[in-house]
Image 1 (cartoon, rainbow, N blue to C red):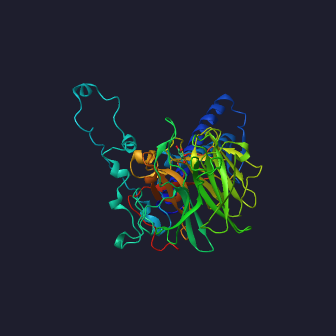
Image 2 (cartoon, rainbow, N blue to C red):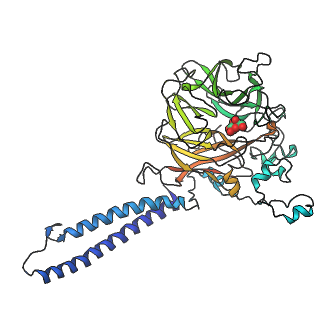
Length: 504
Ligand code: GAL
């Protein structure tokens, strides 16, 4: 802990300690005098129960007991106070020790006015009071909303890293169209990032959704036929070259997992040092989401082509939103929403990363979470998840664990800034991946999708700085004030960039 917040806490704790010490000593002293007076009155000849302590001084049993009670109370109050700092709603923000990231920790507010209802209301409608007021979420979901440009800015504002951007170079604009080096909008939804040590290049894999959106059934979710998994490469995490479709859909064979009528979502790729293979895991499904399986593909190169191996229900369970996480020791894990999305499962992969093992744990039981994105900092595992509301946005939650297999604790909503609705909708987006920023410990990029269910190909990317630091929001279940895990904060910014000197 550092800076003014740390100092304040120390002063608070110290004055608390002194205050309680004085209070309890004073109280035991008064009680002792009263007691002695009573004893003297009752029995002049009987000695009070005392025992020697502190060479020469004498203190009574009650003093010791009261001091002990005081000490325990102090410990408890300190434990509560250290949590209340964060739980009061006004999140106590601790500045990152890394100066380069300070400006990204500024809280940026958004003040978006909801427009008055469109057009003239009929006299009948005018007489009737509306059942409820329109919210920003309604506006977001209404493709004809006058605020459409706020959530889905048009092509004129697209980020084009290839043109001369002057002072705007390297700036992320969450929600704007983002062009690749050929000037086409990046198509990499529900994606994941691989940093390839060998080529010192970032590879961004995702769902290539550049097709028409339709509903397979009246009540089915909006969908785009599978086209394949896209791959984009970059050295600076801003300028992206399209490496093409690295795993393509199957056009004719209807029984094939990759047939275009199915669902392929959330592809993630990791590299296996032992086999020298790039391994892709993804959510494989049919158009009704009843297959609920994972698929595995493999390649010798990060840019593919990937060979599709098989799909399965991992550990025999239904599996929908998923991710994979490779730990520092080389062990990789599969994490997936299961039991009809009410729980998550986590389990290690085999050494070649091509299958799951028999080991699996049920986590976040009954919490109905999906879109998991894992990362690790200073030995602690963190995971962002979303609620389950299809393409509609909802509140993100951050979870933490000492051991990747659990138990996993809930640490609350990590979103900061924007406005209340922004924070309750993960800035109108859904988690997909968290990228560590090399050279800046505790700093990450939160990758999320702003889905556009009316036209899925036009879904946008919301990338924001994620910082680990400061006291956690709420008391954790398994502790007595410890471990004091750090808060995870995702800061809203209309525009932001990585510090110029991050190492890439
Ligand atoms: C979401 C999920 C997306 C996609 C969508 C379909 O809950 O996170 O990946 O499956 O549902 O409605």
